[in-house]
Structures are given as structure tokens and as C-alpha cells.
Image (cartoon, rainbow, N blue to C red; front, side, top):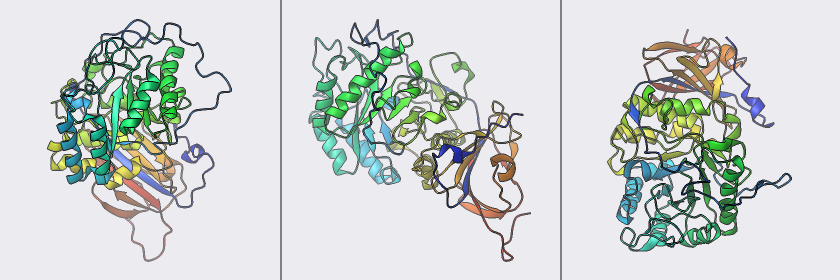
Amino acid sequence: MKNLFVPMHSLTRGLLAVQTTWLVVVLGLSTSSSARIPPTATSLTTGGCSPDSNPSPDPDPPGTPPLSNGLALTPPMGWSSWNQFGDRIDEDLIKSTIDAMMSNGLRDAGYIYINLDDGWQKHKGNRSDHPLEADPVKFPHGIKAVADYAHEKGFKLGIYSGPGNTTCAGYTGSLGHEEEDAEMFAEWGIDHLKYDSCCSHVDAPKSVVQEIVLKMSKALLASGRSIVYHACHCGWAEIWKWAADEGANQWRIGQDISDDFNYPGNREKYYFDVLDMIDRGNDLVQYSGPGHWNDYDMLIIGLDGNSAQLVGTGASNIEYRTHFSMWAMVASPLLIGSDVRTLDTYELQTLTNKEIIEISQDPLGISAQTVGVGYEADGDLQVYAKEMSDGSYAVALLNRGTFTAEMSLSPRRDLLMTWDHYRIRDLWKHKEGLYDVPYTVEVMPHEAKILRVWEVQANASMCFFQ
């Protein structure tokens, strides 16, 4: 078995750790089904997402310094409207969502972005026929009033547009009006922009995709307002390799997520379930970091098979919790996609676990990668690890099978750390103990047990589990 472990300290760019700690996650996975209807456009050069007819072949020539807005130094956290509501959104929904997130603890847990997805616009059809403006029926007081309400309550407001004549749902897009729209968003008090090409550019040259990302990035920077920039292009054109240099703060690594944990029927189709998304990200960890994040798509916790847009029958509580744990491990943005007004106690406890969120929001910003000895990188049992800013590590032991499995962790064997004594804390059970032997635990199918592990110096007063 090839050892896939790369010492995490080699990824910290010279950062010296003072204290050594590990976070350990034990996972087990399951079966289910769901996803968003793919758009009819097939290419940025032929459909509603067509850029200018003569795009510049090299929008960011050699020697051009990378663009940066200095934002999103940790993965953005918040809520987005699309998965649950589609384009059926209005002012009352957004305000009641804000109120609910204040009262149920989500805001205080760090979920501060309230993102309007497609459907806030008044007009459908080509931009040459209609201006881009808010629907006065859905938003009678305008978007700025909603932004003001969000800001007063301690939130930030996000909005949606696309680099075509029309958006994914057919509303007026921003093609050819990037500066105008960026200025309007800034005047409204917008804090986050999802710029979505609807996964319609599979055949488009990389230079075309780069151009549309760069145009809006420059427009947002010129607006004078701090606006987090989400380049939502479904992982085409190897966007993770260049989007950060063009000023994007997050980019999708794959197509739309489905409301499934592990549904083989999705394979080779439009949608990615939770395991698909994890697998897609395994080779992309080096591209993610402070200010620029691999986006594994929205959280599906709380959808329970009732999404207005995604296919799928939902997942179990354990599967949703594992999904949340792994999104934290890989440092994906955490954007809730369900109706936060109806979340049950278990779902809220999952989404507000401070110790798991700490993994997500660690300022070092490393994404977990596969490590370990004795587990196949592409088998049912997998180990993930990442270094934390205090010298600790996050580790996930993942069971992809359908049977309960006994898994163990040895810092020497699996993490290449010369530790003989260590303290382990279970971040879901909130219990801990001291160990001088490999830690062993049973993992149910599709379960995630998250542990934090510290090296300790033994003395005679310590009692260790034998």
C-alpha cells in the first residue's frame, strides 16, 4: 500500500508550530438520491452565457500581478436561497430567514452571509431588451432596504448574477454590463456576489472562462466596496488553477450537489452527491487557502428530500452530519441551502457545533488530504488529515462501506509524528481521554466521529487508557 501522506508542515509555507495537536474524524458513509435541473445552454460561445464575440485570447497575460480583494480569509459561512426555494424568493422570506438565524443561534455560530440566488430580478430575457433591476412585487422596498435590514441584524447580504444574456433561470444577466452592475451592487450594500455560468461552458476554451471571471472581478474591485466574489463555473476549465489570481474568493469544483450521500445513479450524470464531491476535491487541496477556496457546493442538511431544485431523496441524520464534518475538514464554504426556519434540534446542533466550525474557520486554511497507513486511498476506509494554525491537526477516518468498521489511529503509524502519549477529544461527544496506545473506535456506516488529539508529556500522575 502506497503511503499517500505528505507531512502537513510542508504545506504551511514555513509556519513553525509551537504546540502539536491533531484533530481526528472518523467517518462512515451511505446510500440516497437528488439534484438541480441542468440548463439548456451548452456553451458560452453558443448559448445565453455567450461572452463577447471576440474575446481576448489572454485576459491575464504573463507578468500581470494577481488580483486580490483581501476578503474571505476563512471559508464564508451563511445561507443561500436556491436549493430550497429556487427562484421563488421575496423580501418577506429573506427577512424572516434573517430573523430565524438570529434566534436559532446560526448567526452567532458564524453564518453571516444571506445570499439571494436567482429570481430576485424583475425581467426575464435578453439584457438588450430589459434592464437589470429588482422585481418590485417580490422586493417592494428594493434590495438596498433588504441589505440595510441584514446589516442592522449583524449579517451581510449576497446577490446573484451571471456572465450571459440570461441567468440559469432565464432572468436578465450581466453580459456586457459588468461595471454598471458592480456599481449598482455596491450602491445597494451588497457583500457577496455569486456569478454563475450555469455549468453551460463545458466546450468553451479556457481563455473564454478566464475572461468572464476576470471582467467581473475587475468591476467589483473598481466599485470601491468589499464584495466577496464567487466564480460559480462548475469546475470547468480547471478553474481552481487560475481563479485565485483573477480575484475570485471561491469557485465550484464540480456540478450541482444532489440531496444524496451516496447515490450510484448520479454517476456519469449532471449531479454530484456528497461522496462524489469529496472525491473530486481530493486532488485539488493545494489550490485552496485563505482568500481563495474550493467550493464543494451548498450544505444539504435540512432538505430531507424536499428541495425545490435538487434531485434526491435526502439523507439520514448521520449522513448529513458526516457531510457537514467533511465540508469543515476540506475548508469548503459553509452555505446552508435549506429552510433555516424549520430546522429541527438535531440539525441545528449539527450546524452550530463550535468545535467542528473551528476546523472550518482555522486561519491556516488547509484543506484535508488523504493520509495514513493500512487504508486504501480509494477504498471503503480512508483517512484524511490537515494541520491547524496552533500546530494541531484535523484527521478524518472515513468508512465508505455499508458495514460498521473498527478503525484505529496511531500518530506514529498514520501521521508520521513521534508521539508516545496523547490526549484525544471527541468533538461530537465532547469527551476526551489520555492514550499511549493506538486509539480504536467503531464507526457506523456513514458516520463521522471527529476527534482532536494533542501530544502530552507523560508524568507519574497521569492515567492512560491501555
